[in-house]
Image (cartoon, rainbow, N blue to C red):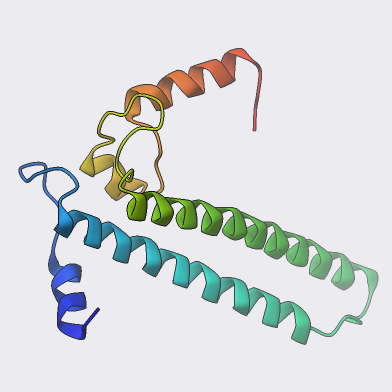
Length: 142
C-alpha cells in the first residue's frame, strides 16, 4: 500500500450507511488488524528483551519474590498477547477469504460498531450472548 493510500485509510471511518464490507471497509479493518498485531508483537519483543536483560540475583528474598511476581505477570501478559495475535491472524485470513464481518454461527452481519469495538469478533451480538449463556449454564468460568 502506498503512503497516500495508508493516510486515506487512516482518515476513513466505516459507516452503517454504506454497503456492508465494501472494499473501503475491508481495507480499513485489514489495516486496523495489522496495526494492532504489530503493536502487540513489538510489546512482546520488549517484554522478552526486558526479561533477558534482567539480572537474576536481585538481592534478598523479598526483592526476588517481587521480581518473580513481576515476571509472572509479564509472562501471562505475553501469553495473552500470543493468543490475541493468533485471533488477529485468523481474522486476517477470514478477511482474505471474504468471511470477515459475518457471524460464524448465523452468517449474519456482525456489524460495524461491534467490529470497531472488537475487530476479531466472529459472532454477531445475539450469537455471542447465546454462547455466553451456554457457557454460564455449563459452569465454565474461563
